[in-house]
Image: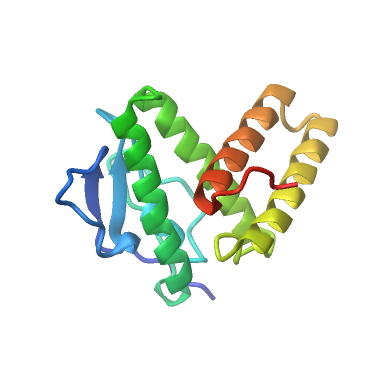
Amino acid sequence: MTKYVERKVETFDLPLAKNVSIMKPEMCIIRFGAGYSIDIGARCYLKRASIQRKRDQASRLVDLGSFNQARSNRIRELVKLFSEKAASKSLAPLSLHSSCRDFLKFLDWCDLKGHEKVLENERYARQAFRNYVEHLFESVMKDELASPTASTYQSFALTILSELFCIDDLS
């Protein structure tokens, strides 16, 4: 039986100050402005509680034994990527938060569907993305998800994976 526990967390405002580096990504909560934060560090653990916690309980419960070092390194890169996006002001804080939230939905789906290595390399990312697109299509066909919502989820997954792996085409 999996035991989910709280872990120590630290909140970082985006964009990160120039002298700030994320030493322990697994502890990282990123804040995109007033009221918009995400526990991105929980994704360093392959097993996370699926139940949403109350707003005042920002950290997600995790299985400490499921920590993945390779994932942790990529989460650090994701934090840097979102920090750069925040610094460029190309997206409003709420839009940037939505982009991160929807990408993490993709990552959650990957972990549930056996694509835990999605962030390890381009080959795994391509396979997971293809399967995710199929999943979204099926969800739309079954009227479980609206087409514009599926399109948004797909777009954010594609954009972030493309930027993370420096590739133009995930098909």
